[in-house]
Image 1 (cartoon, rainbow, N blue to C red):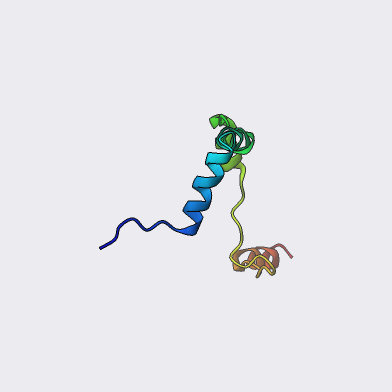
Image 2: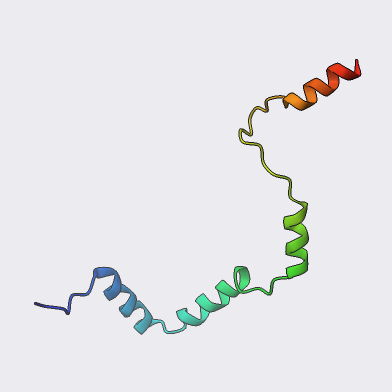
Length: 75
């Protein structure tokens, strides 16, 4: 069995990186812009705690039965 198969994509990437070895460093720099950041854990925790839960159906909300009864008793 021949285990030396290499896809066209792999061949393309090998040739591209052989021609332009600087691409790996540019890729790391570009990744650092968006992804490789220090996370402020306290700010993230406060953000998660302040979040309100989303309703089950966001386009229309059914009135809650407890609130209807409270409104009727107040009148």
